[in-house]
Amino acid sequence: MDYAKDVLVNTDWVEQNLNTPGIRLIEVDEDILLYDTGHAPGAVKIDWQQDFWHPVERDFIGPDQVSALLGRLGIRDTDTIVLYGDKSNWWAAYAYWFLSYSGVKNLKLMNGGRQKWLAEGRPTTTDAPSHAPTQYPALTRDESLRAYRDEVRAHLQSVQAGQGALVDVRSPDEFSGKVTHMPSYPQEGVLRGGHIPGARSIPWARATNEDGTFKSADELSALYGGEGVTPDKDVIAYCRIAERSSHSWFVLRELLGYPNVRNYDGSWTEWGNAVGMPIEKSYSED
Image (spheres, one colour):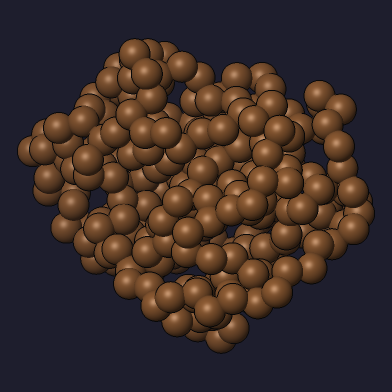
C-alpha cells in the first residue's frame, strides 16, 4: 500500500534539489532559535507564532496576510514549498495544515525533518538567504480543514452514532487527566484535565519511526483502523494547541487519504478552559 498523496520528500531528494529553481525550503521549529544555529542551505525561517497568529486575537492571520508573508519570503504560487522542522516535524506539519487551510498549494514535508537532516550529516549554514519579494496571489481559506469548538461539540452526536471519530493525539497521561501538559513541559494554564467524550487516544508519535520519519501506509492504516478511525468517518483531531494534531491530521488526510479530516486548533487549551464543555477523565487519585 502506497501513501495516498505525493506529499513527502526524503532528505536525499532535498539535498539534490537545494539549488533547483522553483523549489523553496521553509524551516518551522518549536524552538525558533534553532534556525540561527544552522539550517539547510537556502531555507527561510517561519516563526509559527509571530508569523501565523493574529497579534491580539487568539486566531490566525487572514488570507491576505498569508499572501503578504509568502510574498515577503520571495515565494511564487508556482513554487513547490518543502517544509521541515524540529520535534519530528510537529510545527512543519502545523505550517502545512495552516497553509493548506489558507489555500496554499504545492506543499510537501521533508520526511524526518531537521532531526534526520542533521543525523545524516547533511549540509547546514547560518547564512540567511535573501530573496526578492514577490506578489503572491490572493488566497481563499478552505474551512473544511478546520474544526471550531461548537462544531466539535455538535460532532459528539456523530461519534456516538458511529459516524464520526475524535482523535486525541496527546500523551496517555494528558488523555487520562493525570496531567494537563506534555511530559517535560510546564503547566500552561488549562484548568481541567481529561479528554473530549468519545475520543480515541492515539498519541501522535505512534505514527513515526525512531528517526522521525513516518511509518508505512500499511502500518498507519492498521494503527488508526484498529482504533475505529476509518476512512468512512468524519474525523476531528486535537491536542493542546494543534501542533501535534496537525501531524496526525497530515497522516490521516495526506498520507492515508481520508476524505474528511479536520484539525481542532483550539484543542485542549480552549476545551479544558471553556465553561460547560463536557469532559471525561480516566484517572483518579483515589
